[in-house]
Length: 199
Length: 177
Ligand SMILES: [Zn+2]
Image (cartoon, rainbow over all chains, first blue to last red; front, side, top):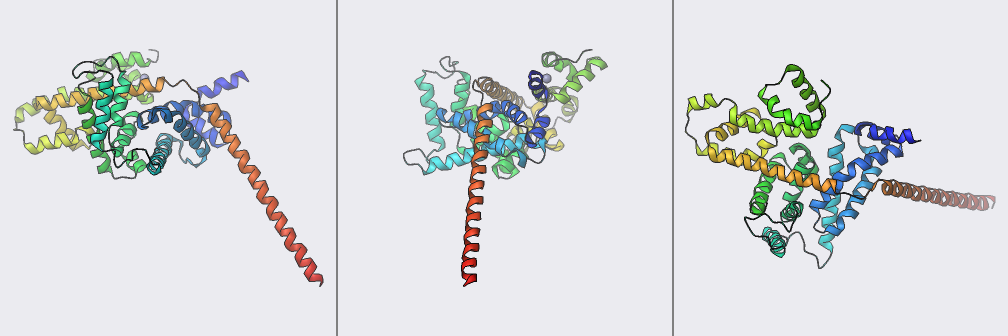
């Protein structure tokens, strides 16, 4: 029994997927164990509310587990899993849009995002041109990414955190290669500008 | 040589790019780069920065061409795709050229690479901070949903059996009449 457990840990991701698709729950569990860090980090940077991150992570992982048989080529796992994550994120945006008393994406303009970032930095008494010691670098980056308008946020996370190619991002976000290219460029410039004085 | 680990590969990357390693060592690194995406990313970034500073500098100096605004425009528009390795050979060439002859452009390139490093460090840190293990819950939830689907299947099977029986009984009754 013990030796079997170790064997699963030794398998590469493609082999795990193959087994999981043949109803091997141990392999599926191991696959989730590997993928959960990615999914968690993605939502940690995408989600406007920190308290939603855990639920979103669990739901995305469940969707991945449930649909693993629909993945045709195990080599495409990364891009396939990110499609699930992105769809869930879009679902969530739509849900929040319908809820009253929450800020809609439409009103979340660039200035609004910038203001949120400035408030956070001010709250922690961070001064420009000084390293902000009260905040961890991750929190600053997170606030910076959060301050980006929606379409820019998702592309920078898919590119830098998940390492997807432009083509994969275009498929995932249902946009053209040219759009992806210019959005990533703009997201980088904007982030660099808004954070350069603090990191 | 034993297969080098990531740390060893990282310290040797610069020499690997310069081509100053023994054939054996350089083969070992090449092998590692083929199997390790993390080191491969580091290698790509380093290779990009190196290309800019070294390759073909003499040729450009010989050309000594004046910088056209359109070339600077092209640089600004494509720099981001350049560091993502998403440009064709011709565009790559144009970007490198500007970065070599224009100091500001070179600084822009270094800044964007440094910024990417900060982002990736931050992402990696977040990943490593995950304490909760979702895998067991996921499998349990999956089994639960499976059971629910299974029992609802049985329920529908029962309902359809019931209705078929009703139809048969009714036809029998009216059939006799
Ligand atoms: Zn490595």
